[in-house]
Image (tube, rainbow, N blue to C red; front, side, top):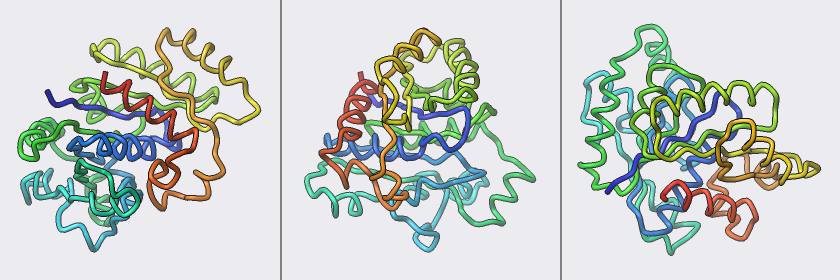
Length: 254
């Protein structure tokens, strides 16, 4: 049975897209067929992690939402890029990117789109690409498309940093996810300074939200130096962050 997994955060800059891309790569390394959709249409960016530029996008999610193509036509097989770093990846990854053209982003902001088409598109992708998993990189905050993504998800990871603004916003998101009956809900605390007591951070977060912490990810100089120029778990397969993300991937598939 195919799964839909959403990765969300209340604010931008938490590492949501990085987490999505890394979990996607780890699932593909297990031999799974994975689709990943960038629904952060107003500020797309996950394509950078998969080394896809504008010239390589024959179609985008925007084209599907405006009736210019079928959603499967916007899917790009990025598996060869991943196999350059790990030839043993046995699965496949299909990226459905949002347009990075300024005019098309402006059109979304100006005109919007029929959010109901997203749900139809997600279901078509599962069937047309014979996916095992569909990963959704959501728009930060709470809007109509984010609520839709959360509502149809089998698993949801909410990313937060150890920051008071994140703590407050995450509480709202957790409450909404519970009202939408998300079956598998976990929190991920990202960019935790090394001077922090990780066990204390986990205890505080779990007590605050009465929700399991699926991973504590430390601030990493290697991650910062990579600067989104690739997927961390493939560049640093033996790094502690990679081990934590592997456990998160397994938890989301449970």
